[in-house]
Image (cartoon, rainbow, N blue to C red; front, side):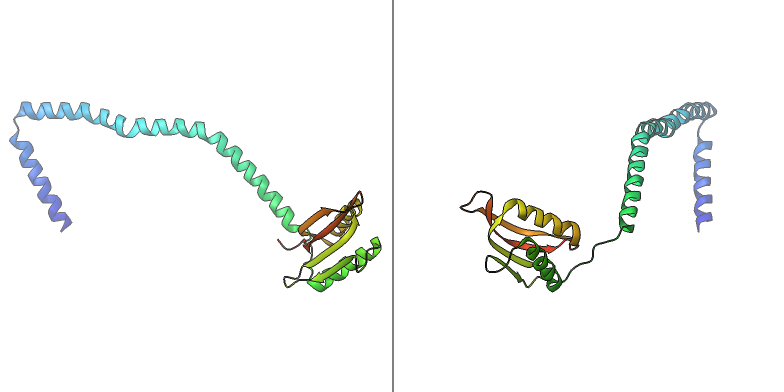
Length: 174
């Protein structure tokens, strides 16, 4: 079928070409000879050449971005290989916080701890030294990866003493 269409088209174009006089054929040949290189330049070479220039301008920033992404990927891989802190369950976390609070000299009834449904430890302290509270939190974070989930601090009547209400959560949960 394709061969038939090709032969038919070829014969129609040949008949049409032969219908032109010799001077018309020569004029069309010269016109095609001049027009084809111009069209090839305008449609093929010039767009390709301007695309190459654009690529030369865009390539250095893209290479820099690639180098940055490779460096970030290497950093991610090194961080993945580091030890991850264990996720503490609520009871273990409450026991650790109670032990740390006892070392600070804090005990019930002015210092209350309770386990919440989300395995967080709710903490309420009536009068705590603010600087000791900050030291207490930094020790929990550094040694047990326990951090503050929510916190409300309000001043007490004595200077440097605050009332605290909040929750402590396992720092490995993110």
